[in-house]
Length: 287
Image (tube, rainbow, N blue to C red; front, side, top):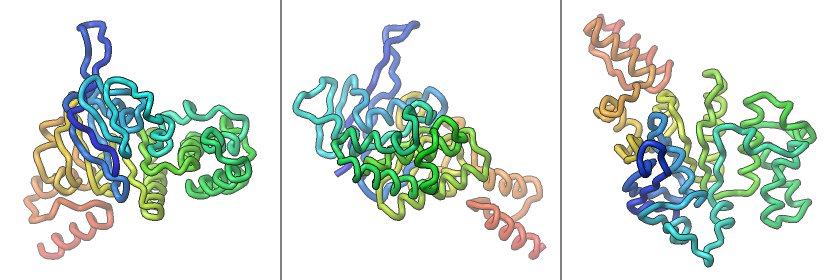
């Protein structure tokens, strides 16, 4: 059981033409457990629209979805409990200030559980546990969320979704605006949550270094269509990037340059700096 797209198309009203197809004819399956997925594509490729379908924030113009056994079509079905879907599939927006509104961090994190009728004391316990999961200690509970740094706001907004205990977590550009160290810290956090809970996590990102280093599956959108669904290793060894005008990770770009310019017999497919240094050392020691 998970999230299954069946020929899903979503159209928006357009000023220049009748409608604009944000996504079209999307068919894919996302399982409930053990998926760690990067959703990739240029601005306007349909990534956010696709993500909003995953917890029925919006409905398909045509086609259908099955979300944890709930059949979602163009028409809202009164028999379906949409709040239950949004509990199962937690969506964290790109800008955390969209999700922060209470006077304390604790109240903000507790809002979701309380909204789903969790008793007050249990909601407080969930807030502490969720805060710990995102790497913040209990001293943050009484702090005003609007006085936090950008990175801390991101963590609190994620904790607010984790406190609901969703089966699947969807994050829209969670590492945007962070320096490389901050991006890696946050990605290690998501990977740790994924490994500890086995929850499937889908992350919208433009950062190819992160895609190559962390994820086990990549989805590429181009002009609203799914142009690739596979492993990052297969993605970066294919011509999909060139056809989609996407960049290579810095590790591959560096080694590719050395291979072409210096005519070195070098393996360009390395995921981190340590592997790059080791490969350069191997090649140069043989020269």
